[in-house]
Length: 322
Image (cartoon, rainbow, N blue to C red):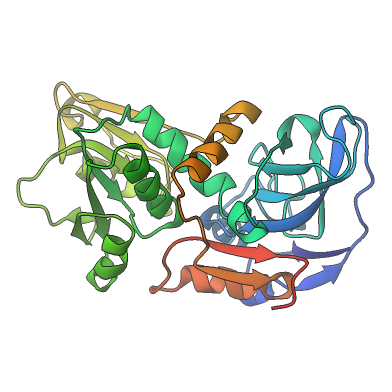
């Protein structure tokens, strides 16, 4: 089969197609023919050498969608069944979705029923499930003023679309380091856009009842200062490339009466993912990716996501010739 194998840290140009053996099925694992996968910042971090727990060489890719090609669980995962997979060590502890086929533990393959196209379905797993779980964690309601910090990211755009579908009258604010993107953000459903300059929100005295923090520990403490009393902030992403909040003092830095929590997309069930797909269809949420690449141009897909002008979700379709 063809796959993208990372042999050592490098630039996006180091991601090239290779011929490698198609994985052999083993007990408790099934083979997914990959029809599409999304590009994620964490994969770029790994390519840069920022994931010391990942042993190289490795086929990257923390998510994939496709059909079951060979199965060890014919009742739940029959051959030809559409399925998605994400997280749980995929592309990190074992080879991932940047390939024509990927071998995955059965418990990490989620059969789904959907009429979405492959590009649409490929845009959903990690991005939309993270957004969906984060909004549930925030206990979002129709009266909220929601700030999404890191709004132009794939998860940021997904969260905005989901929040607007669930609560049409909610007030949505997005932060960005590049105000030239505010037209795109407002088209995606945001009411207002705030400049994020030198990791500081340019907000005057404005506060928000809910905050989705996608930059992570780099800006978490600044975001907390914008959280209203009885408000909730959910830390989900690490777009800032910082994993821990050194010197964080929760007593003095979490506003009195406010709440700090987090969400990881490792917490997933088959039923939850199907509920998300049904919600997307029911509300006619546009999940069309910003750009689509073929497997041979996976490096170009990562490079596109790294650009200052990037916006939304980027996907790769291994079987296509674009």
